[in-house]
Length: 169
Image 1 (cartoon, rainbow, N blue to C red):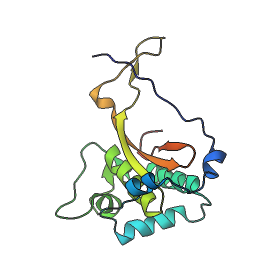
Image 2 (cartoon, rainbow, N blue to C red):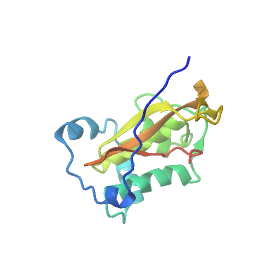
Image 3 (cartoon, rainbow, N blue to C red):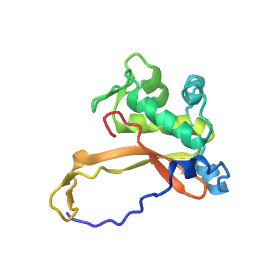
């Protein structure tokens, strides 16, 4: 099937996002700061990763960079799952057979760690661009192009994408 999509791409600069502050609308606070399953060690890791960051933009960048670049994490489409009532994010970040996963694992970790720091965050899902099929900016998007990523809210600018998945630039 073919379809067209019109999307808005943020043009906010790093400086603008860094200065955006944390005056979040009530509805954003109500829906995007919940931290179900958050463990103390996940919250502590988020604090450690973002130590020295001066604003929420720097904090979000630090979290995404940590997940994308830390050598202990591995991208794989066949990852272990937690057992019992163990939290997925805690399992992914700390379990001996964790630290291996696909985009949902990376994005979920980013979202929960951001929220633990008081930053509204959400997991978004869609498709990566796919394969260019002609010079008219047409792309062939396949099921394999499905992807999940984290978005963090910035007052005055809205939702901004932060790519935390290893193997995705």
